Image (cartoon, rainbow, N blue to C red; front, side):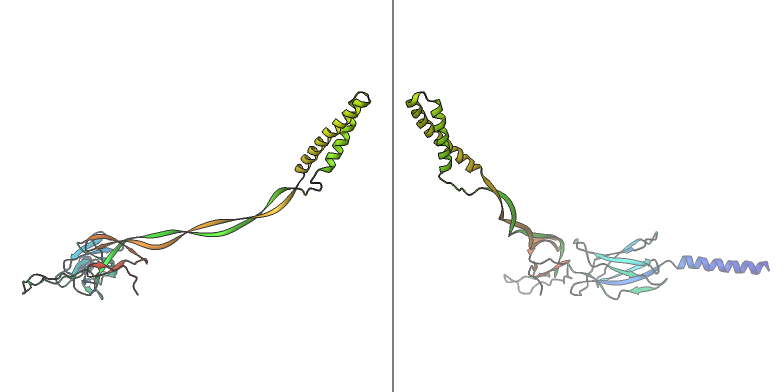
Length: 287
């Protein structure tokens, strides 16, 4: 009875050890291509685990002559982010994949694409050695956009602003020649002069002089009263002000092409890449 129990326990232990030893690795096979679907050899591919497990966090592989690469020590049934990293500094399109069950290899349904470079075919020696004949090297078909900065222009838009204000104006003058003030002043001056004069003749002279002086004073007094006589009115005052706004007139784009950086100006905001033709970046807006 004890021997039978020992055999059962040993069998269970062996099964557990087998699961622990054999259920740790799975494989993944894929390819790296350029934007035209041509294989890219010598490209480093990094597989980074989404939920890191010690010993399985990150792996690297190098693509072969046909662009293929293989990972054979991935954790089964785990998610990894695959990113191609060419030596020229560009970065390809990352994808998230799931590793297969224990001991099985899974093939990617689509290749990893690096759009900033193309596969360069071998250059053959031209048979015609005459001047002007040379081998043509291939160019990248896309440039990687590194930074985009808006170029703006200040726009001033005029508009009219009006408001009601209180203003003071001189009241309408009823006696512009100030006859009343002259007459009253003359009469008062004449009376005062007559009272101050001595003798009959002296009083007449003093009354005449007082009348003249009083007329002048009365005239000036009335003038002062007229100038101080003001009325308050409401007046609408308008002026032109300018509202400022910023208008986008273009974009300053920094790009990387075949490991070198450059700057161009475009009339549109580009995406992650700019098209390249004959080694030159195309800055016209795509149709």
